[in-house]
Amino acid sequence: MLGKESWPNNQLERAGILIFMRLLPALLVLFSVFALTLAIPWVVFAQIATPSIGSPKPLLSETDTQIQQLREKYRVQLTAYREDERNFNLAKQQYAQLNTLAALEEAVRKTKIVLLSRNEVLETHLLFLKLNVQKTPGIDLQTKDNYIKLLDAYLEALKKNQRTLETADDRRELSEVTLEFSTFASSIQSFSSNLAALIQYGHIQSVYDKTATIHKEVEEAIEQEPNALKLGEKRRAMEEINALVQLTNSQLQVIREGYRGGQNPGSAGLNQIYGNISQTLVYLKEVLK
Image (cartoon, rainbow, N blue to C red; front, side):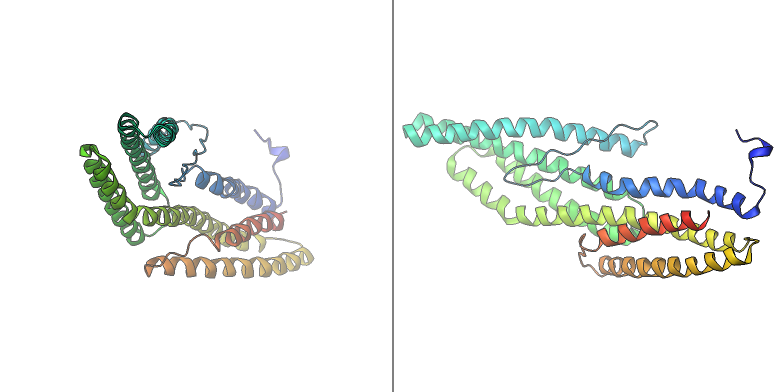
């Protein structure tokens, strides 16, 4: 705890310390945005990638707990899927070598198992995305609703395919189910990428909103600088920061309007926006010295 002798006497220094104490959480959130986005499991239909697992945090909300449970469920299902895929490939190779009815029957059975396993992993992936987009700040409600409706439609199509698959017994029926899956599989893959980009955008928008609030407070704080020369330097520095904040806001506005208009801006411009916000926070910290 600071004693009276260690507390800054200068009013600007005191204001700077208080603002920086609020600036630090924004910095931490910003640098964790991409780590959070990477925690989303990416499903590639030929080979499903393992999701990154972050360290558990204390006092999880109900939604966070559900997300954590789905993440663990995904890991278990993914392990099972890879084993089922390996067994399917072995059965397929054996049928190609033996060309017997028994080998054909085994290949058909393994095909059904791996298809069921694939659908289970994909459903968990979509549910994981749904919970993440619901809890992500920085996204307006209409955009969230639009994406969740699409996601629910894909989930229903997947469940329908799963029900049909469960009753399929021969090669012809499995072929029909596979053909049905192919009609929406690529759309789900594209949609998942767009939804992950939306979640990433939401977190960046949220950090920008916090940064904009801190920016205004810093603008007011520097006016308390008693040294006229330093005040002039700080005002000139704020002009650079203002331009960067305005640029970032306009970039986010383009993405925001794109989502509202039903487009999928993707993540193309997010890296630059991330860099702009990061630089803004560094400048704000510097101008308070």
